[in-house]
Image (cartoon, rainbow, N blue to C red):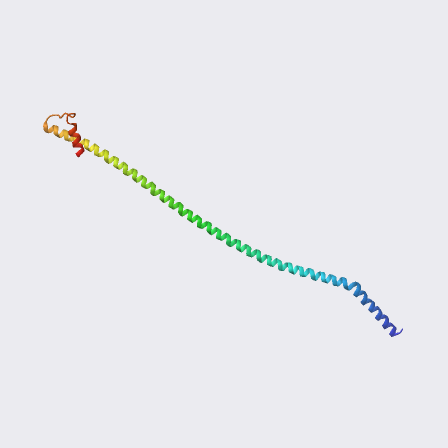
Length: 156
């Protein structure tokens, strides 16, 4: 065997092998690698989008919490305001009721005072008649002197 011929045959076999690899094996292998790289890139892009979406969602949650806290504080302030209004209304009602009770008591006192004065006038007139009767040692005609007794009672 000739080394030159063996070398040429090996070179031709090697060239055939390179051609088969370059035309039949290498393109599908490159396609698979490119697809894998594309999937990895899409996965990384999706992860980035997910992180951005998560950050936006977190911001929305924080804003919603701020709004909820503000709303809760507003409701609490309204409740305090309403409670103060109810207390003021109750105070005003109590004052009005106290004034009404006071007016009723004053009217009752005035009526009692008037009744007491009338009773006192009657008692004084009866005492005056009794005293005059004792002084005169005789009985005074009540019908005849009614005008005199009424005048006396009015003066008292």
